[in-house]
Each structure stands twice: as C-alpha cells, then as structure tokens.
Image 1: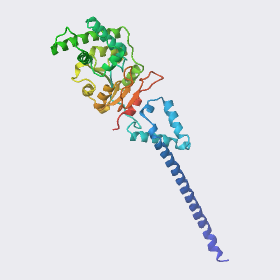
Image 2: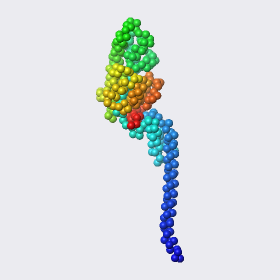
Image 3: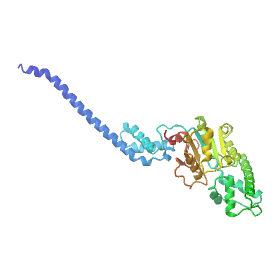
Image 4: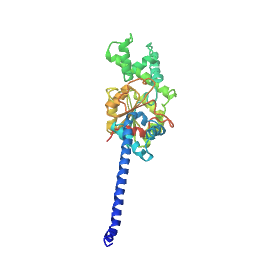
Length: 343
C-alpha cells in the first residue's frame, strides 16, 4: 500500500506527457499534409505556365479570372490565393509581368495605322490625287501600296517606286532636281491629306482617345513619333481634341536623318522628354515600327492595322487587333505597366 502513494502522485505528470506527445504527432501529421497539398498545387500551377501569354493579360478581368478559376478548381479553396500567385511568379520568370507593375513614364504613339488607319484610304488616296494634279499618270493600287509601305517615309517611298518603275520622262536626270520635285509632290500630298482630315474623311481608331486619357490622367507623358510629315501628324493628333492634343509632343518627318526601322525617332523622343528608353512604352502597328521601338530598348505593343495584319511581330511585348473602346478594352495603362521590364 505505501508503494502506491508515489505511483499515484506521478500519474498526472505521465498523463500530461502522453497528451503532449499525441499533440506533437497530430501537429506533425497536419503540417506534412498541408505541405504536400501546397506543393502539389504549386507544381500544377507551374505546369500551366506555358498556357499564360501576354495576350491573356490584355483580356478583360472576367476572361482572366475564368482562366485562373479553371486551373484552381481542383485544389482546396484556402489555397487558391497561393495558386494564383504562382501564375505571377511563372510570368515574372518569363519577364511578362510584375506583381505590381510600374507605370511607364512616357507613352509614344506611331501615327499612321495607330491613331488613325490612314494608309489605305488616307495617304494612298492623297498620293494618287497629287500624282493626278501633277499630270504624272501614276496610281497606286491597294495591294501595291501595301508593298510600298515596307519603305518608311513618303518621299523615300516615292523615290523607291520611281527607281523601280522608272522616273517621269520629262524630269531631269540630276539627283538633286529629282529630290526637289519629289519633295514638291510630297508637300502637295500633305496638303491634300490634311484637308481630308479636316473634312472628317478619317476617324480615330477604337480606344485611342480612351488610352490617351488614361495616360494623361496618370501623369504619363504622351508623344507621337512618325515618319510622316509633321503637318500631317499634327492634323491627326488634333482629332483627339484641343485638351488632349496640347499634351502631345510631336517628333515627325525629317526631324531625324534615318527613318524606321532605325530607332532614331524614338531615341530622340526619349532624349527630348528626359526619360530613359526602358521607361518608355511604344504603340506601333507595323513590323518596321516594332523593330524601331525594340531597337530603342522600349516596351512595344502592336495594334494591327488594315495593311499590317500578316506582318512579322515576333519580339513585340504584346499584339492586339485594336486598343479597344470602353467595354472592349484590349490595352489599358495597367496592362502596359504589367509589360514593362523589371527594375
């Protein structure tokens, strides 16, 4: 009987120790279960990384959420935030997005094909009218002009065309005099084109005014960088309205010695605006424009136009059919921010 007394006094301590050991085993089991589930979810997300493209980021929130929810449906609800976060991690690895993108400091628009789809029904028509007024007998068809667009700049385009098909017979052979006459026709064509803009024959492309408004309201500088004549570019920019047009810097025409695909005009804009090229975003519509923007070290979004739908846009940061008006936004300042390079 005396021996029972020490045993009775130690039993509560033994019981407490057994409970602690049992709790430890349960905690370890739960920890292992959560870790395995979490790793499976992360592995599944990483396996889906190749399904995420820049184009997905430019879709509406409803489209993006639908895509993400389809990949998270098979995992516990409480892991969904971790899984969706892993998509950002995967994208960051491919340098497509940042978790919290920083706004570009400048948004640089090309003019023809970006602000207005001017080429087929604008510049081409104006060139033909100028040829007719000068009695030259040339007329550029739709397909032919599409091929000529591979040459940047109107004067350069005419020169390349005349070199190919032959110069007007009554023109002198002197190179300087030919250049003077080409310039004279180009000035006439510019006047005709500006008149077409004034008469309302050409309209802004969908989403242009919206995106410009977003940029201005976020303190982002806006500019137009084009190989076209400055007068023509100014006429197009004026379609945005006085308040928005006055915010634009214009870099156009012969302001640089080399035209696109040379990056000179974009590098000049970067220098004049006082903004590093890496903090500039470019909106282009053509292969040569895309090459100019990327060669300048800038982020490039391509919005396809009437003539450029089948061109090679490899290397562009994003490609869309249009910028998109309200309710159909394909490009916003937020999505451009997500495409900017990591710091």
